[in-house]
Amino acid sequence: MNVTASTVSLTVADVAASREFFHTHLGYQVAMAADGFASLTRGDAAADIVLLQRGSEVLPPEQRDQQATGLIFALTVTGIEAEERRLREAGAPITMPLREEPWGERLFQLTDPNGVVVQFVEWAAQEEPTQGDEPALDEAPAQLEEPVQPEGPIQTEEQPAMHVITPTAENVTESPNARMTGLAAPSRGSEQLSTWTVAMEAGQTGPEHVINREQVWTVTAGALDVTCDGRTEKISAGQTFVLPPDVLRQVHAPEAAEAHVAMRADGVASVPGTEGTRVLPWAQ
Image (cartoon, helix red, strand yellow):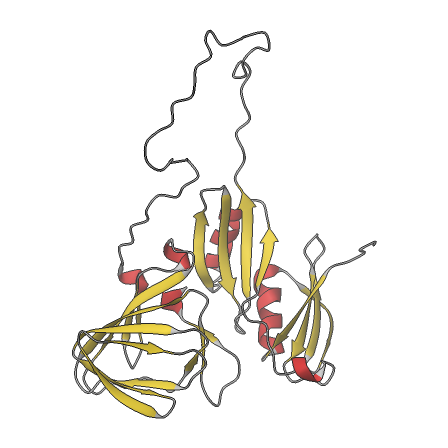
């Protein structure tokens, strides 16, 4: 096999929005464009991108209603700190700030208007051994001894330490319907789970929406009227309810209420009557 080029094809609800995102923030140029279609390219090693309108008849019938979700488009770069600073100053939608993993990967993420996640990656330089660190070949240990087995579980340097998260004002999202305070999330140190608190004033009602992941809510104060798949339940403080994925739901606060929510970290929302999906900023 001789690969001559690499192209990523993304099916999205709004081709123009993604095209502008990749051009403005990532330097992609439009090679070809038509109604519901755009071909983007760069002059370096980055893969070309094709954007296709969801529902396009050029797609096989079983793919027409799908769109690019759960996908991460990763770009390995140099000077990642300068790239994040440039994008932040340009107002780019950074949904995971720059961080470094224990194994040496440095990364941050953007999310385009159609929910496509773009990840910038740079690997930390590995320390080279200095001269004299290696033992001489003709050196032999003075005495061979049986290794001592430690009691209890073996701890290695690769095991990550516990991560403590303290929410700040930057983690709070105010909407007309509620106040969300982000706790655990990929941008704050977790890998698989997002958690947050929800506070609603008496009489506030959230919009009807669908989440693609299961959510677990525990009401910690007051009470909530929760409608899920056409059935309404009143959930009081101390009770927990589970909302299944891909089912229409709505939350109403008949009195001031607070709740703690947990969800897999890659969950996104959709609203009936609108196209595409929406990220949950407090869970990113």
